Length: 396
Image (tube, rainbow, N blue to C red):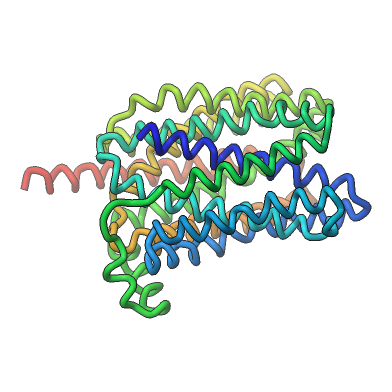
C-alpha cells in the first residue's frame, strides 16, 4: 500500500502543479479573459463525460495497458505548457493542455483504484482512502505557496519544475499495474453492450445504486455553498483578499487533520454509514450557523469544520463504493458512478445563481442547510434499514 500511495503523491503533485501554472500563464497572456474562462469550462468536461469513457477503456484494454498509454499521453500537457511559455506554440493551446491534464489524471486515478482492489485487503480500504485524501490535501496545501514563490523568483524555473514533475509522475504511473485478469468478460462485448452491462450492474446492485443516488443529491446540494463561498465572503462579509485566502488555508488544514484521524477507521458498514449521515448533519448545521452568525470568523471556522466533515464522508463513501463494485466491470461501473454523482452539480449551481437575483448570498447557505437536513433524515432512515438487512444476511 505504501508504494501505491507514494506513486499517488507524484500524480497529485504533477496535476496540482499543472493546474497552477496553466492559469498563471493564461492571465499573463493578451487573451487572458477568454482563455481563462475556456480553460475552466474544458476542465469541467472530463469530470462529467470522459470518466465514463475512461472506465470503458480500463475494462476493454486492461488497467496495465491503459496505464502505458496514459504514460505516453501524460507527457503531452507538461510539454505543451513548456512550449507555450517558450512561445514555440500559442498560449491558446493551454486550455487544451488543462483539459488533457484533468482527463488523464482522472483516468490514471481510476487505474489506481483498480489496482487497489487487487493488491489491498478490504479491511485496509478505509486506511488507504484516508491516506489518499491526506496526500491530496497535503499536496493542495503545500505545493501552491512553494510553486508560487518559485514563480515569483523565476517563472522559467517554475515552468521547468512543473514540466519535470509531470513527466516524473507519468513515469511513476507506469508501475501501477494490477495482478490478474480483470477484463476477460468485458473485452468480448461491444461498446454499447459494455455500457448497458455497466449501468445494469449499477442498477442491479441495490445498495450501490441507492448510495450513488444519495451521493448525487448530496454533491448537488453541497456544491452550492462551495461555489458561492468566495462571493459571500467578498460581497456579504466584505473580507479582503488575505482573509479570503485564509478560507482556502482553513479548508486545507481541516482536511489534513481529518485525513490523519480517518486512517484509523474500520470497514464496519454500520460505522461507515453512520459517518456518512453524520457528515450531512454536521454540514447542515454549519451552513445554518453561517447564516445566523453572518460573520467572517464564523465562516472561517465553518470552512475548517466543513473540510473535516468532507474528508470523513469521502472516506466512508469511497470505501462503501469500492466494496460493492464488481471487479469484472470495475472501470465501466466506476465511470457510470462518476458520471451519475456529478449530474446535479451544474444544475444546482445554476439554480442558485438565478436565485441570487432575489436573495442575498448568505441566504443560499440557509436554503442548503434546510434541504440537507431533510435529506439527512431520509438517508438516516435508509442507512438503518441497510444495516438491518446486512445483519440479517450475515446471520442467515
